[in-house]
Image (cartoon, rainbow, N blue to C red; front, side):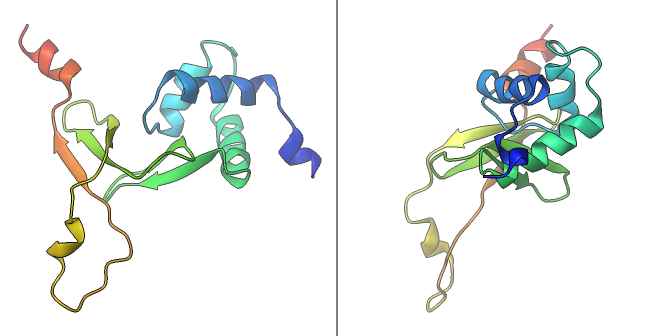
Length: 131
């Protein structure tokens, strides 16, 4: 195994903890802000370098929502979908899947995979808008 894959720096450990503590897809900027609480002075280049390494070692996966930037989430999770808040733009994971979603395709079409994204307002934004 290469040293690059084995390397576990303070920065990489902080980034791993960010994903352990925030069970949702995160942007590099969100990761930086959260990781800087533990490792002051961490820069965005360090975040991108570590994200690349964590994706290569299959600890993280990249999530691309239509019209959005690439987000990252922990790998190895069961099939799930996403919800994006129109107010704060955060993305959350939705567990499970609609039964028989493949039946939405026309007859004789073969579905190999699918993505479902719901858009609306998250609980936190909804609560703060009531005040």
